[in-house]
Length: 188
Image 1 (cartoon, rainbow, N blue to C red):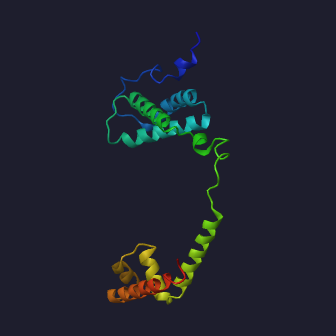
Image 2 (cartoon, rainbow, N blue to C red):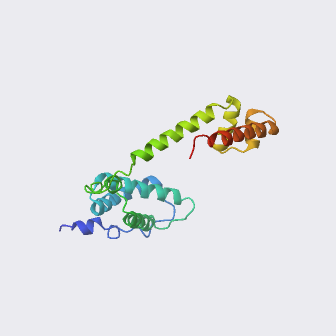
């Protein structure tokens, strides 16, 4: 008698192990369940690599949960994990191909959105900022960048550079005054 692919791929139709004792060796469960999961995912996904990845993830989740959860029927628990993963995958539409692919005509009707005039203005503005910041003394520039770009607080900067807090405040005030005085020059 032959078994249909649907029956073979069903997680619930394989031999049941509901009478198994609550303690299971993971290696035994892995050897018994991994081929069944592979068949199931291969039938559902049609891709051996994705099926293997999903089966491995199921077993990883099972292993992660078993110390904290007393599992009387590992097959049922693994089945639940597998069906939940498939449901999540379907809801996200997360296949590698769908994440990486784009429609062939997606870019045909769009402009690239780059305005050459705006790009030139942006480059000029960046150069202006570079010029203004390069005029600062190196220590003042470092402190300014640590605060405004890296997000460090004055206290963190003082601690890292082994400076008194008032010195960091002085450098920041100097940088802010310099920028305020020079940023308005030649703009608008």
